[in-house]
Image 1 (spheres, rainbow, N blue to C red):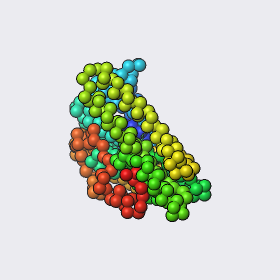
Image 2: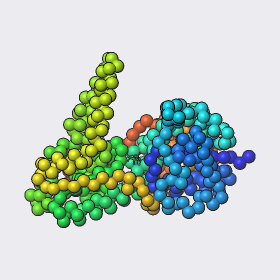
Image 3: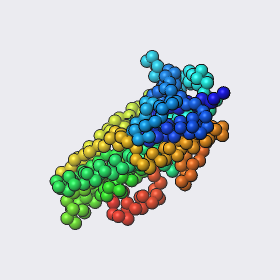
Image 4: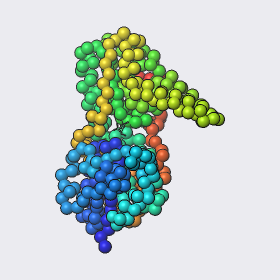
Length: 373
Ligand code: F6P
């Protein structure tokens, strides 16, 4: 009997998802004679049994297309909002997996998806994953697809901001995605020649950034570009968060725990405006006019770069190889230029931050970039 493989995309979309779906599907069908069926909108589509036939010509012409032809969502199998209440839908997923006669399920996603996939693997399903995200923060893979494209977009944005900052003698603060890591901001900041790069891995001191800008003015450079990761935090903010996280841990009664949790939520809400606040602070400290550009979802849209198409196709087709060998409970990772199957329990729940001794940090410092410390 022809083996049938399910596939879904979950979490935030990213360029290269369609290239990966095509890589998995074409290799499964053309090379291994298996059948592939898609589920719409992430794990919710699996719960609601909304399928898409990916056979025949369905995979043609999607290599270069951005987003995901399957749709995506941030639902968790074990905590899904259904009919107004949060429910554990694992049993429904297992039921639909068997009702569709699946031999395995391929989940394409970032850190959250790896966790959800591990949960399903531990529930007895044959699960295999691919690492996608523009954030590049998935553990145990050198790189995720989507990152290279976003890096190019953010770099181009910094290039464009340079000329206008220069013309108006302004500071331009540019906020770059990356969730809680600084891969995207650091990479595009170096490639675009940002004067300061602020990332979550190094809590920043606003005075250090202001001093660096004033130094530039003294040398006749009356404009500056500050690339700030969405997850970057000032030292003061980091200290506050650490204090209330400790309070929450130490709290002996429920009310105290709740107060600490509320305070943490408030701090998170304030943080949403951090790039704008930084613009104001730098304006006050340097007496230069400032503007803020938040790149947002622009960084996730559009056609994937050549590098992402190659990576997604390579990991996708290797995924079919692993399925044919009966290797499950793993993520197909890129390690040292090779493709490896890494056990999901070594991936789930871990975040790959930029190590402080990473050559990108050294490079930035060597060329005189301020890192806020
Ligand atoms: O994980 C990808 C990402 O784009 C992050 O960089 C960002 O923090 C988040 O998703 C945004 O999520 P959403 O699309 O749900 O607003």
